[in-house]
Length: 601
Image 1: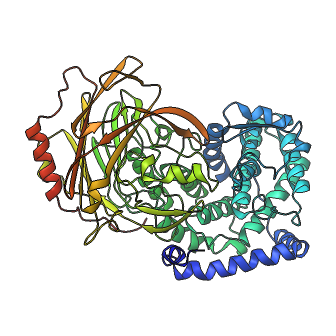
Image 2: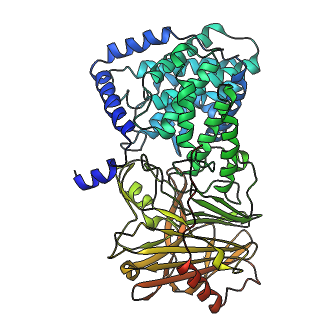
Image 3: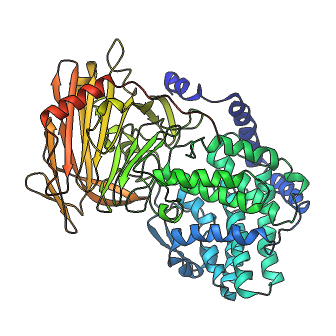
């Protein structure tokens, strides 16, 4: 126990979170000690709810939104699930049959239950039921029976993953949507088998109603509320027990969705998942303002995506957990598009693009999905990812998780031996810096597309005033990309920057990276490159891919360090001259902070 670190973590919690942490912890303790009584009470509460009708009109649009998600997650592998075979977050599992599923096995992930919880979501049942085949309905009923039989409330860990309200919320959405899709294909209902599944859904609705994650809030609480809203819309009218939704859903949206349409947790992946949740809310017809929130989020997602049609992988994000950004975003991003509250800038034209992270690591009350990626960039050249984020190797506490969240794991300027964010365990954050945009007026005609930012994550390095770190990003679409970094303060003596490039770009002599008929030449304009080093990145959760890590050693002059690199992919793209680079650094040093945006959804 480190009291200082603990204080730096919990001091940001709201009074509301403090109260609900005590309430929710007490509730979990009672359920763990009296599981039979606790389950009986939920069972009794469920009988007071009407049984959901998957044929209710709103369920068709809800089911389409959920089907798009689950087809992305499971692809064509959903058919194997009826035989007890699953692909969960990059790993294959074969239990032999549905009845032999070990719902709370190890799943090769250590202490974090992400795969166990994902299995318990029953998301694979959605595309299975969408086929309209009787065997899909029967298999889904067997999944439900197996899950209930294999996870009595008295079993160690069952309340923490399978009967977790977040997992139960997913089951509500998936099973309701799946049966709605089955009905659409099949036509006639199967009252017996469907009824068995719907009884489980009703129990999950009562469980979530009694277990709202008001202590965690943000995406967890929103998921709870979305699931209950979908259930209510399938009942034809809002059950009295769910009357609170009309008050709490707008409040949760205001917390999760910022004024510029970005997600408060600053994860492009959770943004895409949150957009699907808000589409579900809009489809229920219960929340008139949800449609406007959908439009803002669709626009923001375009800013968070690159020229390959996928999201940037800042903070906890990976590809394959949500539908491709191109299928969800509205496509309205301009060559320079800002999310001033969320803290991202996108520069791009055609298939050349850059997403620049120059905002907070997350909401102070819950920054659990944060990484130390201040002023980092991801970029595509010719529609292929060229500069990549490290991604997410694991949610389990330990060296892989820790390393993936450090400043050295990202493409931003850093100070060796120090971190801009204090991470501990899997999702805890103590001291945390900030970041923001700089005014780019002084950069004049340096490049067609320009952005610049600052970060305060190294304010604790050196005194007085710590170490100020700034970055300029300049893009010439079809030609090249300039990144210029400036450090001022005692930490400048330890200034460093690396660039992570996927190994499908082959490293050649002279700083050239080649792939698929494209060639990108890296030139150090200030500082010098080290030799490319072997590295890994995780564009999909826990699936390692090889990469090159290209280190850049800045020029040092007392308490100032400077580094500049130009990536060129056109034969006629000459790097900016020394006078232009010096002028850019002068402007970077003098640029004032841009005013912060503000407001909620």
